[in-house]
Image (tube, rainbow, N blue to C red; front, side):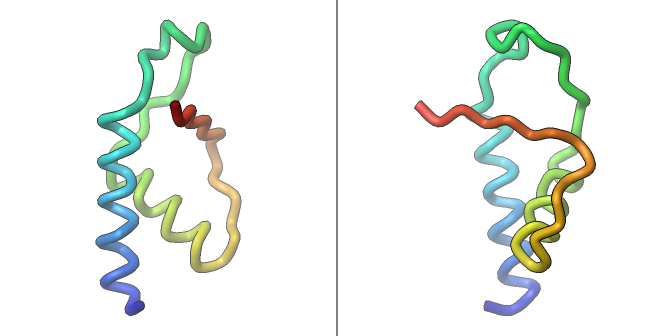
Length: 62
């Protein structure tokens, strides 16, 4: 997979996370607002290098 294909995949995943995320009120905590591009870049960096994101991301999959 090329970097361009991987970036496209990461952006698609960021959109899916954004669409499917639960309301912050359900979690009972405040979370930082992250743009789709920032989230996709965090996913990309994690896949490429294993770099941990600078903000904690918690995703619940039902």
